[in-house]
Image (cartoon, rainbow, N blue to C red; front, side, top):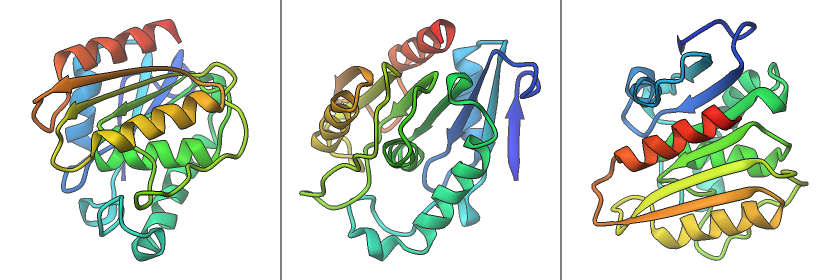
Length: 197
């Protein structure tokens, strides 16, 4: 199932694929779209089987999250490949942000943007980020809390560094003591990225 908000894909200025968190659903992540309130953007939110993109922590060995991880990446690809990168924003929250980061790093391009709310690329500590090409100035916003119970801030920093090293224009904001949620400041940053894309 793919939930949608906003205009049709063909009529939208941008298309934003938003990926929900573990135990959440498309309606939950589309609440972020409603908060960002950019009427000419089409928001698409696929549903994970059982509301979980992969079974274990994103910091588990990659092979232990297979085949679910590959299936999840294929779900993102099925939406992403139908939209020219210059109109595509990839984003998500928590587990969904991790999946979006992993997909983007495996498939770099000059996207309209990346919106990673509390997420980072996938693999245990010491894993090198995928390096497959260049983002050519893609605006990327990463927001997170320190501490966060699910996504350690060091991985968010590593993800920001990996994106920047491959040519993304990265903005990273770390909030002290924020609950595991998307703060109004993060919403404002996401809205600004979408308006500027």
